[in-house]
Image (cartoon, helix red, strand yellow):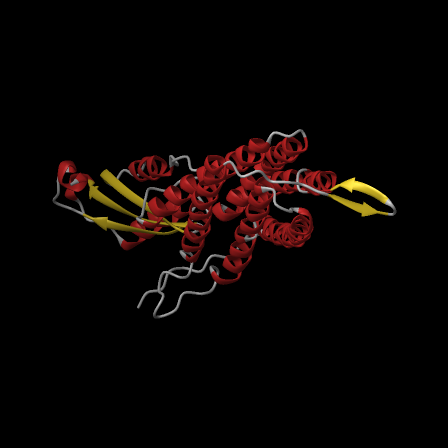
Amino acid sequence: MKLAPQYEFNDEQDKALRKARRLEYISLAYLVSVILLMYTVMGSSQAMKTAWVEDCLSLIPPICFLFGTYVCWRKPTKHYPYGFHRVISILFLCTALALLLMGAFLLFESVRNLVLQEHPTIGMKEYFGQDIWLGWWMILVLLWGTFPPVILGLAKMKPAKILNDKILMTDAQMNKADWMTAAAAIAGVLGIGFGFWWADSAAAALISLDILKDGWKQTKDAVTGLINRAPTSVENGYLDLPDKVRATLLKHSWIADAEVRLHEQGHVIFGEGFIKTANDGAVSPEQLRGAMREIRDLDWRLQEFCLTVYPHTSAEEISS
């Protein structure tokens, strides 16, 4: 059985991977601190509870990324001849489904509280002989959950692109948007303080909609990726790589026409080409190996590319 080639990172990618892992470990430690502090002060505020759940969900992408990086680069085996790259796509789907389902549940809870007109309260607590409104502690904790994620998200963007890692990119984008969750929760807490009972549930609904939007977008991307969609970038734009591959093949004088198809396997891309030789002539193994090597050199993600020769086939038949 022929096994898929094992890719080795270059120096830039090794450095990016080490940085990404370090950032994700920092993210996990930071999120645990936010989750514990928020649980301590959230009280009966629906907005605080929703923000707390979102922070709990934010643990999933770093955990999935760290787990995936230790599994997906394992060498192919007899029973897994294509390797383990697709574990990244599976983990991406798990992350997206968790967001989608939890977002829907939290939105339902927020709307239910608005309909039932539940009035949350935030009480006072004595500290050093002074009565202090608990809402101020909530706001301080929410501010702690606002700025560090934005910095972490921006730092994760570059290694995500270098590694072509969609889980890392998703995590970075979620981190960058975390300030909106904190801002909405702060508005809900202040609304309770000013006597606007509905502000808390309204803020929770806004946070839930943001979670639901992220979950839907990521679930759609994860599912389409698992059905061998044409390759996309980490920002989900379609690549022009198939056109580049075809143009490279057509540069050879012994190739009259060519069609290609590519698909993603986690970080990497596998593909195949179908060529018609010029004047239906013979082609040597050296020519085929050289063409395939040239194609693989176009992009580090293109790990395996095979060529099939159709010596007596029209261009229309190749396409079909």
